[in-house]
Each structure stands twice: as C-alpha cells, then as structure tokens.
Length: 230
Image 1 (cartoon, rainbow, N blue to C red):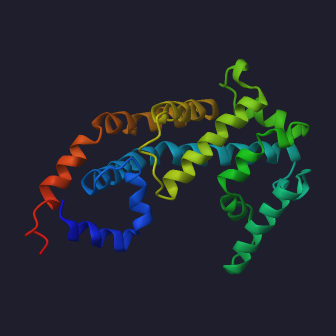
Image 2: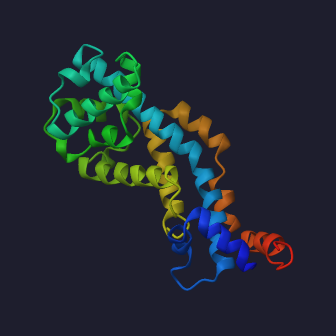
Image 3: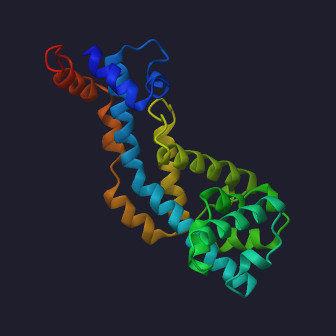
C-alpha cells in the first residue's frame, strides 16, 4: 500500500498502536485491514455491552436498595476498603464537577468493575451477595451459580467491555464468538426483555463472518496508488 499514507497514519495513531496488528510479521496493508476490521467488530459489540452494563448496574442498585432498606446502601453496607475507596472516588468526581451528590449521579459514576466486584469471592461471606445472585440472576442455571464461575464469567465480560471501550485490539481473540454468546447469556440472566430487545439489533455474527478479506480489498482500492496520495 502507499507508504506515505501509512506513515501518516502512524504519526496520528502512534506506531505502537498499529504495530500491534503486525506482530506476526504482517505487512502494512494487512495491518491496516486488521485495524479497520477491529473497529467494525468493536462497533458490533457496543450494543450488547451497553445493555449488559446498564442492566447489571440498575438491577443491582434496585436490589441493594431493597436489601439495605434505603437508597444510600453504598454508605451502609459492609464493603471492604477497596470498594469504599471506589465509592469515595465516585463522590469526589461528582463534587469536583460542582454537582450535588444525588443517588442517580453516584450510581452512574461507579465503574463496571465496581459492580462485578460484588459478585466475586471477595464478598462470598456477605449476605447481600447471595441476595443479588438470587434476585438479579434469576435465569442463570443453578449449575452456573457457583461464585467462582460467576466471577470468571463477569471478569471476562469486564475485560471485553474495557477493550472495546478503549479501542484495543480484539480481532486476534480466538474465542470472540464464544465471548459474544456469553455476553448475551449474561444479559438474559439479568433481564429477558433487555435480551430480546438487543437481540434484534445485534450485528456481531454477520460482522465476524466477513473476515478480513473485505478490508484488504478496501485498503487496496483506496490507498494503494502511489500517485493518489502524492
């Protein structure tokens, strides 16, 4: 492909970011095609990740409000030091923006990592955890409700979410279709209505099936002519 065009992309995207797509010795053309394919894959995962995170956040919040008997559960439940620091950080961010510390703002500020941490062995002795699993994962098969299994699954979903949100490389993940299927399973465990809605707009399978060849052709058609970018 046109070397000047690729060099200019390296300047704006950074050499290290693009070089991740050529670790197996791939040429510039293949690297750029992989980069474009990666963008499309991330785009196709945005909707289910959006629904997963918001559904998990809101259902956990509602359950903890009921469990604690108040909306300020983050101030009253027996969280460990790590969670308390996350709660304080969230409040500080809101205060620095000059906003009041309302319940909705505090809940929205918590990261996905905060929510998934509640379903880990860290809190296996906390009574609120069994309450969450019982009330928030009603459609999860009993055989899958082992806390270590749930922790492993939700941690993978968190990593997938962060990788997509931070524009990282996922095109090389061999188990990406399996992770996509697991993501939808998690949504279904949380809420069937949300699952049915996002299923109607899911585009991952068709995007994944494209493979890299259409993006190779895209690069060749648009950025292969030395004169085109002179």
